Amino acid sequence: MLRLLIHGGFFSESDQTHEVKVAKQNSLKEIAKKSFEFLKSHSAEETVVFAVSLLEDDPLFNAGIGSQIQSDGKIRMSASLMNGENQKFSGVINIENVKNPIEVAKVLMKEDDRVLGGDGAKVYATENGFQDFSTEIPQRRKEYEEKLKNGGKGTVGCVALDKDGKLAAATSTGGKGFEIVGRISDSATVAGNYANSFCAVSCTGVGEDIVSNATATKIVTRVTDGMSIENSFEKTFSELKEIDGFAGAIGVDRNGNVFHQDSHPKMVFASFDGERMEVFE
Ligand code: ASP
Image (cartoon, rainbow, N blue to C red; front, side):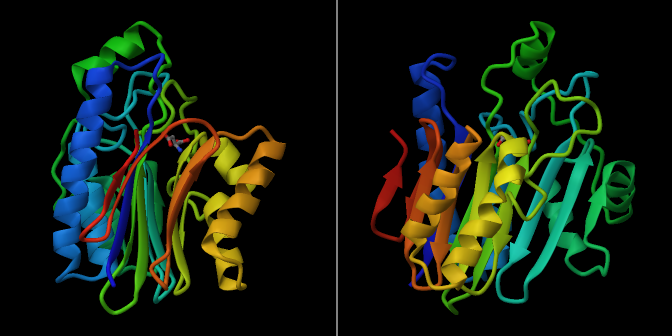
């Protein structure tokens, strides 16, 4: 039983056109199908990295190419990976000028030190063969110059259950846009990306709310303690409501149950099990 869910942040009817919506739906469908094919012969960990790399390469989403620009005009990206089976977490925080931050997180899995920030993350990436690459696109520069903050929530993520029953989660972001230099996103923390042998969850939304709510960690812990994935999401999102939090999450448990929820319409997501494709509308 293979399962795969991906997300690409949020879609806003008021800020984005119908064409953008259709483009995002089509891209998610294609990436979900390709990643599902990949999952047939690879582990959950390998697959979530594969899927998130494809999402990072698509300028429609706010991760990798097409990332948001921060208040000083620079792009700093964050990404993390968690293997549910061996409980290893790796991540990069505020890395500059690499094409695929999630690939750097993947290489970091072999180190004792597994979360690197800022300049150190970039030095490590360079030492490990990652070339200098600008992920800026003209649209983001235009938004930055106009000081528009719309369309900011567009983190990408993937959760997967592989043929050996193993789970993994990966998440990658360009951040909120216009943030104070040094701000840390939830995406490379266990609040935004968490997995164990029971459940895997990836989040998008306002990082500060996701950290306050410890969203991914709570959902996974609840499933581990015996709650259904559906009830675990619902309880965690009801707690998020108490702080008027803005978030969305995708999850899969070890029995192949998948679930997704958002606090505000509409999270951009797709879910594929080899037969049934579900895409946000
Ligand atoms: N969670 C990301 C952050 O706060 C933003 C997003 O999901 O789009 O950096």
